[in-house]
Length: 361
Image (cartoon, rainbow, N blue to C red; front, side, top):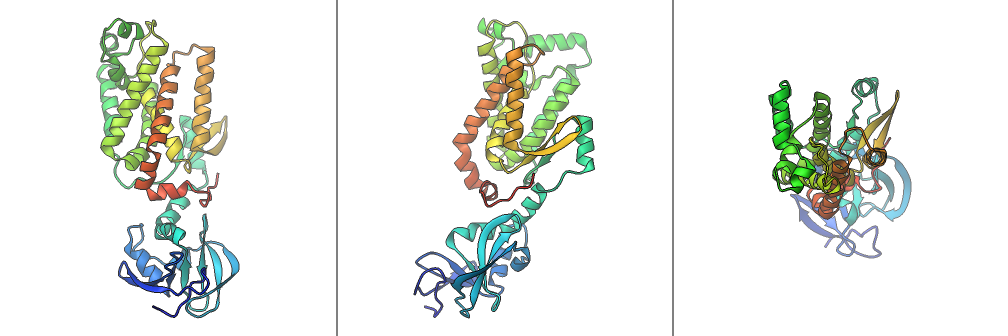
């Protein structure tokens, strides 16, 4: 038993404990931890957090002022700081002995603080003339999100497969007609028990190069993060479920239609739903004429959904809106069911969903 007292609990002595090769002083009553000078740097440098030479004091955010708590080491008053400039969890620092007090519920954020710092710096980047020019020319959003840890093998494989299939028939009109006849999803055919495989195969066909490029861009934009969060095989399975579900929505709502439907849009709409729920910290740029603005993922995809609902109401346009809306609904349902699993598997993503994270848009 040490002679140091917890700054949070009245008359509660701290207990020395070994933790990850360091001896720390812990309050058994509240679970808070006292780190003497350089102990915290050594501990954080040993964690898998993207930095093996952490200088904790250099990454601290705004100084909030003196507290009423006394330093366990030297009895000087502790000072409150934000953990990071853009992550407003509060930690207590002693200016006299350079020790740090961390409350029990702050420990996970502190452990991951080097990675949180890098992620928030990336997410909070300002738009530039390069992003403006890209979106103006392509009409595609620019993403600001967590960088995946692993190469998105499945996402790239799906993009390559979709492209290879498209270029295998796209330049031969007769071949295109034969492929669509056999593999596009035509509700009336399915209703009569014909071509029952088409709800799946139709998700790998596209009607034009622009159709293909647009879908593949959004598959890449959302897929890398989702694959990283879920794992490769689970991501592939959910992608296919969203594609089949979107086709089922389209067939069910257009039961007697003889118009074939093709495209990965329904499956990708399912990815939109998952991305919106799990990556609410992410930003996507939205452009109105020449004005570019960063929006949260939720706002961006809700605007996209509104455009689809409007298109469904007015009709026409040769777009399978029911596949889009159906896929999106399925993705949202999946996201809500798996939310706790994904957050437990990805602690940094979970922390970014908390109000402590300051997101600049």
